[in-house]
Length: 293
Image (cartoon, rainbow, N blue to C red; front, side, top):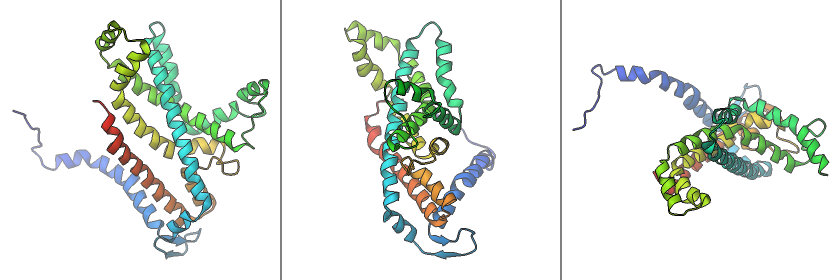
């Protein structure tokens, strides 16, 4: 018989969750409702007048080639950042799981980047790839390649992808390492006794058991690439050159705070939120089926 825990005082449960509900309302529900309302308005930059125009802001966005180009840039950036950060994190976790001597120091060094703020991460990689004083740009010149992300949009995109992926590797590493350490060693040893090579053991035994962790990190990294990379792009390229790195989240800022198109910027934020929610639903609806718990 399963015992069910309850509260003798009926209002105690509401008191315990009240603080979390207030935080959720103030920092999520209220701003989201404000953005949805503003997306239906045409406002002057000073907020002195406004006109209710229904969905004209949304229609104007999908007729704007610059906004449609931002979709493509966001897809490329998000896919590259997610694959690079998760791939490297998994490789580092596998290596850390095998380290015996100096394992604590090795793991600590891999975790440190997670404590770095996104804007600081962007500045670090900006200086490393700076065409004039950057050490990596200097090494590339030694091999005959003239790096200049100020002029080359593809190089600027590579730079922000590297910076964004580097910032997220530590987070992914922690979860992959925890997942690896939870796998029973007896399963791996049994596969080794059966003659499976290390590569075969990883893909046949280890990786399938990591599928819940991988699925969770996939959802988190997609959301990270869409939302939390604003600081990296702002500190590194400011969306340039020629808007080559202006992804959707940065375009919301650029049009709203720089261009002062408040209604259009709000409409962009609503679309961006809808895209992320839709991608999350798709991942849970179709990708989770392949997850082995």
